[in-house]
Image 1 (cartoon, helix red, strand yellow):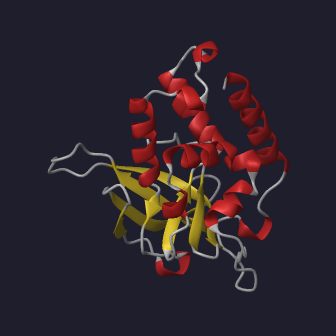
Image 2: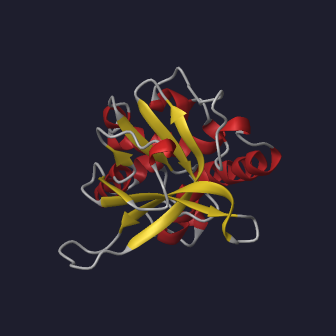
Length: 211
């Protein structure tokens, strides 16, 4: 597990710094390049191992392939580096990281619930349907999700530069009367799989599970 995650980390850094998703990079997709994949959501994730092979392994471990591939849904895809940082919180000593198959039942249950909150069932969240005002949806895990567009440039100036999709999850405890949203920026938006929409999340600022 340790060697696998380290290899994933290095590969993710290389691919992040060495290339981009070309015309799919968020901030505006040209109208003649819509990101039609001709692959199911799972097949697309499997086709990008440098970014998603640990994610794919967790999805299969949780038995959520059918939910990910359900027609008409939206999947917010966390990258391997986000998952690496999640395990780093669980096991600060990387020499003690278990293999995925050796995770406890409680850990597997927690990971399954986390993954469910990246699935928006029966609703395709399109960039073109978003604005600076908040839009809301409910995740497969029963959590409230929030979406909007934020425009800022590389210096952090608001209302300048490209507009980015922001996905936020209500992480308040069950039964709380106060909603508390934790956001993450989408770095690749509007990928059209054969069953739904995929948005890829920023791995540099996001930890799997919104930790």
